Image (tube, rainbow, N blue to C red; front, side):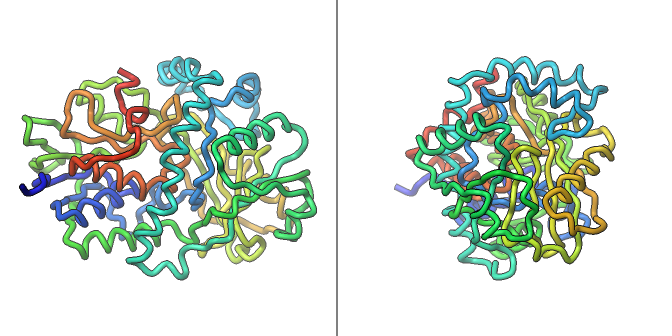
Length: 419
């Protein structure tokens, strides 16, 4: 008997989640059309899949519901120069998110998040390697590990991170200040120690990688329509509709992979999901990418630097302020200040950028069918790890659509947890 095969799929979103999902479906012989108002091949494409830190971070299991930071949050929010900021005109809209966040601010929830982030993060590099066999990444990916550094000020937090990762079997190599400087001699020694995740890799150009994967999707028969999508609906058991400003399209199944912009669609589908956005920033220091050999993240400051083809990219901060507020100059100034603290030789910066990380209050993504519309599949809410989890999310979602069996426990990623 022939195995069931979905007749057609429409995907809303051409970021790394949507493109990787589309590629995996096409490889299964399922016709796919991706929709987005921005063309991934355009130089004007400036979404999160363009502006992120470029880390492939299979170790990053601990998130912002960790018990060691509870008393630091108010202090960070009130500081003009710190890793966390709040747009005060957005506070009233954040109340549902904060209420749910506080419910997840305990040891049990922290370890639950870590366990189920580890389940998919542990597969993330292999999922990318499978794709990389089909594209040329010679100037786009480097496998030199990723370094985190810290001062002795927050040693309890560092000890918590190390223990949780050890308990999950994650490889990590602790470094003294001297050992960090042997690897990255240009850093100013304003830190006390660090750790290197040697299995991690980084992108020299995230947008360049996205474009190559997208071209592979097109070459294998995938379709792309550049339109602004306004509405999605499941009409019956075998038909979903995706509606743009200009036209209505029909598919057997649809995927919502619109990152921080996914909430309007889930509300149309009758689900009250507390999705919001962590606004992140970056700047480039042109011609300075040779100052470090691999990404360096300064945990005390909540910022990092990655050597890229565009220059040294300094990224970071979490700003809670929604999708419509203008960029904050203070956030840019904070990143520049942090970068020059570690590398005083840096000169002028370029390319100020603001992007939106889709975040949920328990810091697990939503991957799986809509609660009320089984033929509409969700793939969003990956917060800081959207880039890392793109390829593995594509494999998981394509498996759900093709009704394949899996050994993974996917229930923790269901939208049911919020409804």
